[in-house]
Each structure stands twice: as C-alpha cells, then as structure tokens.
Amino acid sequence: MTTFESEPGQLFIGGQWREASGGARTDVIDPSTGQVVTTVAEAEASDVDAAVRAARDAFENSGWATLSGRERGRVLHRVAELIRENADEIATLESLDVGKPISLCHAVDVTNAANDYEYYGSLAWTLDGATRDTPLNAHAYTRRGPLGVVAAITPFNFPLILAGSKIAPALAAGNTVVHKPADETPLSALYMAGLLKKAGVPDGVYNVVTGSGPVAGEALLRNPGIDKVAFTGSTAVGRHAASIAGEALKPVTMELGGNAAHIVFEDADIEKAIGAVIKGFVFNTGQFCMGGPRLLVARPLYDTVVGILADAVPGVPVGDPRRPEIVVGPMAGEKHLKKVEEYVELARKEGARIVCGGERLDLNGGFYYKPTVIADLANDSRVVQEEIFGPVLTVQPFDSEDEAVEMANSTPYGLASGLQTSNLARAHRVADRLEAGIVWVNEWAMLDPNVPFGGVKASGFGREYGPEALAAYTKVKSVVISLD
Image (tube, rainbow, N blue to C red):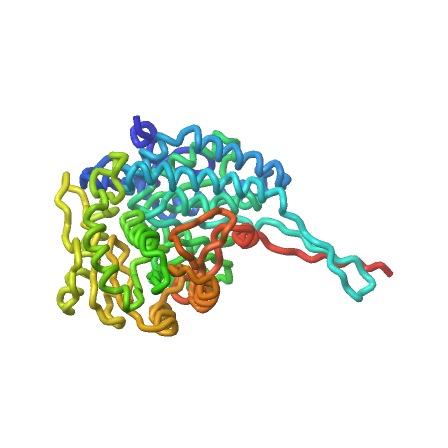
C-alpha cells in the first residue's frame, strides 16, 4: 500500500491537514505510465499566507526556537530513524512520483535524506558563539540564533533529498519552515509532514503548501512574513526568486542550473573513467543539476572513448523503474521529454554524429528516452552550452590542459565539474582552475552531508550541506560589555 492511497493529499498547515481555500486539486502523474495516480490540493495565495502565519506563530510561541540545540537535535535524529524505518514505503512513493528506479530511491534518495536529518541533528549541538579578543576595555562575544520563517522551494528531480538539505539545517537552527515542493512531485513532502509531526516537531514548525509556481510559489516569495528563501531550481526561475527576495533584503540560498564538464586526460584509467562518465550522465535519467553531460577527451583517446561509449551505453538497463535491475527510468514528465528531443534534433541539424540513442523508447505509455551520446559538435553549439537535463552526453576532443580548462569553463554555469587523471599534481592544479562549486576527481556524484556543494556564476550562490548550510540559517549577534 503506497502513501498516496492513505494520505489525504491536502495542505499541511499548523500541524493540520486542510483543503485549499478554493477547493482546487491537481493531478500527480506516474512518469512510467503517463497515468494519474492521485490528486493533491492546489494552494492559493490565501493558503500560503495561512501557512506563513502558522509558521510565524510557531516560531514565536511553540518553543522550538528556544529549545537547546541538543533538544532539537534529538527530534531530528528521530526523523532520521523514522525515514529508515519506513524506507520501503518512501522509496516506492518517490519512484512512483518521479519515475526514479526503485534501487536508486533506496540507495540514494532515502539514504541521503536520513543522513541529512541525522547530520544536522548532530550539528545542532555545535550552535554556539565565541568570545572575541578586543583592545576595548570590554568583554565581547557573539551569539547565533535562528532567522525566523524560512521559505523552502524545491524542484522535481530530487524531491526528498533537496527538501531535506534545506529543512534539516533550518530546523536544526531553530527556524520554522513553509515548504513549496514542485507541483509535479509533491508526494514525499506530504509524507514527510506526517513523519516530522510523529517525530515530535511541534505544529506549525513545518508546513507544506502544494501548488503551482506562478501562484503558490510567487505568493510565498512575496510574503512579508518570510525571513529567508532557500531555492533549488532553474537559473531563470532562480533569478526571478532572487530579485523578489532582494527587493525585501531577505537572505537567499540559490542552487540553480548546471552543465558540468567531465574531463578525461590521456593518463586516465580508461576503464574507471568510462564507468564514471556513464554514471555522470545517466544518473537520475540525466535529471541531475550536478550531472556530467559534457565530456571532454584528450584527442589521442577521443576515437577510443567514443567507440567504447557506443558499445557500452546501449547496454545500460532502461525501463520500468519498479524493477530492481533498472538504472534509467522515465523522464519526470512529457515537457521534459520534449525538451530533450528538441536538443537532439538541433544537434542533428548542426551535423553532429548521434553515436547511440537519439530517440524515445516506447514503453507502457511512459516518458522514456534512450541514453544518447552525441559527437562532433562545436563548443559554441547550444546543445553544448545549454542545460539539456536529460540522459544526453556530448563528446568533444581537446589538445592541451589549458584548452580543456577553457572549454570546461566556457558555459555560463558553475555548479559541478570533474576530471579523470592518474597525475596527482594535475588533479590539484586543474581542480583549482575549474569554475565550479564542487569538483570530483576520478569519480562522479560523490556527495556527503558534511561536504558542501553549490554554484558559482549562473549556478547560484550559497551552499547546501556542511556547517556552511547550517550557518546560512542563522543570524549573528555581537554583545559587547564594558568593563569600566
């Protein structure tokens, strides 16, 4: 029995389930079949306002903000325990909602969500200030406290993880949260509402408003009761969100689009490199802002690498995400599938070579696209420069280390990057020159709650994960006491 059959699919405000004020509901689609599996409430601006007021009341009156970090940490540890206890149900729900392979949901989404709450539950104990040496005849110290009400706006591709990476540190610091999940993938947010309440999070500390970006999202961004905005999504929407927050001088964390380069140098271990390359572009069906969709290969290896990919990529298991052996499931929706098709068609028009894939996979009415490798594109092609966000890899040769770095840094994005080399000095040297918030060497997508990630350039600012994320949900107050 999956959660969508037992949860009411309503808004979660002030610890209570309720219908949207207008009574509207929206369909939730199973990407593997294209069929409606349930409906959820479509929030209006008045519902968002009610959620913000509930969060404000909880911040001021529930006692959550004034609990010790240890007490809040214990509650977050209980959240992590409940996630692990309900792992099968959560994984099934996430697979149904997003189209992720069930094995990926278990190994990545559920595991990392539990780790997020566990990590920030532990880090909550470390929230303290510091005494500061000063030539003044005074005793000076700092205190850290919560910001207030946090707006968490999360995308469709990793609903559970990217919610946890915001909610866990926000709650650890003593804030309250209004969460607006992606309209396409709201189910795990609704599930977590019940789980957080069961763990002991007070009513109103965590609220969920499901609905569209233009209505619910916009109302949340513009609500004067919000003290911080934490956003993950496209660069275009992120610019809009940041501009609204900027008008009100609200702090923001923006984790936006990406288009990472994956560099294979001539001295790389080719077998390991190919494995990392394939993982980098098919992981989560390519719907991964830190994926590696641009492969740059040292020219002496170029033909060899393209040939290996031509043989290996068609063997990657694609299909029904509920089958445990499947690696690549469907795209999250029809519009995402069409976007991928448009980019591949553009590559064909530009004379590129479709090494493998390049077409839909007709299966059960779902939104499937075959993993695709494209060679011989110019670096200024839109297919190279723009974020495709699907299982598509472009391959380009380079002749020198400087050229590889220049090509890697040539897009507007800077979220992730990576390289394959057996030369330790080169690894450090190139990593230092790559314009990205995280650089992986000889692997891809190695993530841990203690290691921060985030973007530069058009990929945003601020950091998720690590002590850096917790600090971003706090404000610092200095106290200076005269000793005269």
